[in-house]
Structure formats: C-alpha cells, structure tokens
Image (spheres, rainbow, N blue to C red):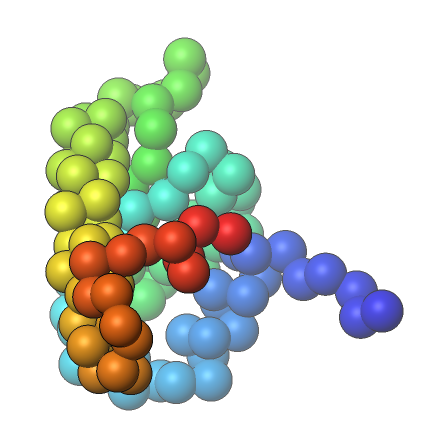
Length: 104
C-alpha cells in the first residue's frame, strides 16, 4: 500500500509539475475546505499569485465561502443528470435517463 500524500502537498506538487498552469491563469482562485488552513500552502500559493478561499475561522478574516459553496453544489447537482444522459447515449445504453449505474 502506498502512503497517502496530504492534499495540500498534492496541490503544491501539481502546481510545481505544471508550471504553465499558473502562468495561463493569473489571479487563480481556489475554493477549499478548512483542511487547507496551513502556513506552508498559504505562503506557497500567495507567492505564486493564487488566492485561496475557504471557510471563516474565529481568529481569521471572514470569507464569503458559504454562498459560493452552495452555488458549486447546485451546479454539480444540475449537471449530474445531463452528464449521465450524454454518457448513456454515447455508450449506447438502452435507458438514457438512468443514474442507477452511477449510484455507487
């Protein structure tokens, strides 16, 4: 079994590996959960011009993440059925409006 890498470390590794990613997206905004509260990723991202938006904390400046998070969840829920329908049609499934195959 391979050791798990911390997702903050994974993000930094991805950005280090694909240097064009940040160059092509100046002012990149990343939405994250409270697990991203750490000095190392904060410094790393700030140094590269990336903004990190995460939930508010008692001792930190508030961030308006809740409305953004609700919007992202709403868009994901809205796109789930059309994506499944497209996939079912593209793969020749007999029932195109079924999400049963994706319920696991």
